[in-house]
Length: 308
Image 1 (cartoon, one colour):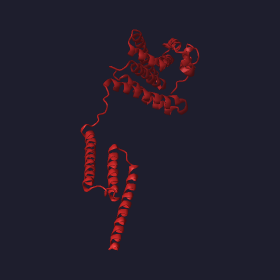
Image 2 (cartoon, one colour):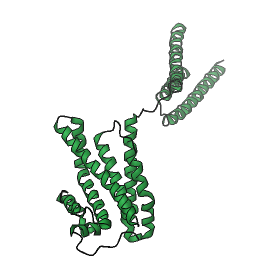
Image 3 (tube, one colour):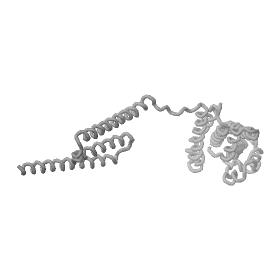
Image 4 (cartoon, one colour):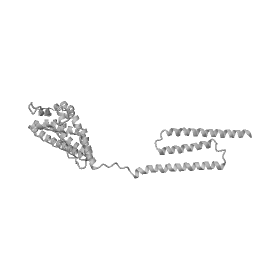
């Protein structure tokens, strides 16, 4: 009788060891899965699974055999209840996180009409700067090819930025609008081939540049009277060399007009004299043939046009 009992005990022990090995294997798989957990809900589910396998491992190892049937029942009952509540909470949270974005779709931040106008001015400014760097300043290198690109684009960009509504925009953007309209029309005038066309475009550049300078003066006056918003726009413009840049563009436009008509030739020198010396060191007016010619009062031979 002892042999069958020993055999049965050995069989039970072997079965328990197999169950333990199976549980260990499952635990390894769960830990591997843990490395890919990336959300709080997934982590909650993983912890619930770990808790479940922990209890299962205790049962398989027979650690509850010393308890009474009633004690074991209470432990298992509470464990099952806690797991149920945890699973229910996970289901509710998971459903909520899925439904909330669907029901309350995130709306993009609203952009005011004033801000849209400012962004339009900035976008056109970038296009004008790109045209200057990629074509206007490479005319000596690429000749008629670069000239044609500037002719086809500069006046269009000047017209677009000049027609951008200004209601409600900040002062610095208003300065930017007229300054870069002047810049675009100046490049258009400098690359035009007919005398009347060059004068017409130069006048547009002069008008926009004077409007930019007037706006800067208005911002300064308002700022000195206590308008903090106007003063901030004025300071930003000055720190960005907006005043010097506008004067340089104006001098260039005057020089183009003087080249064709002889008018306003004295204004070239007077405008140059208002530019800070530090700016002139970087942007030497003598490098522009028509400005250099105008500064002499037209006494030297007129240089050739930039584009023919």
